[in-house]
Length: 127
Image (cartoon, rainbow, N blue to C red; front, side):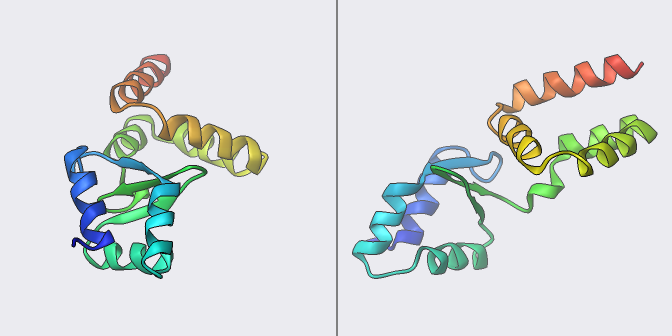
């Protein structure tokens, strides 16, 4: 029988990992851990040791390669916007955390195509 880590690894690879971020439903993974008398945090730590990063969201677990801070689209946006990006980051720091959290969720739930379109619109707006 495959371990929970192996099952997760196979599932995310079928869905585009490591080139894409993959979300799996939280409850089935949690229930599988419970049936096996394992802590979900231990399973996620074992995956982290294998290079599979994760982040628990409301009803999903996001699996990704690397860190969320190293998004290439974000890096290109930073380099393309200079001072405006810094100004926007400063404004985000002063935002209500709940509103900022909602914005982050909306962006994270966008497809890569939607994110690229949004970044291109922002770049065009700056020009």
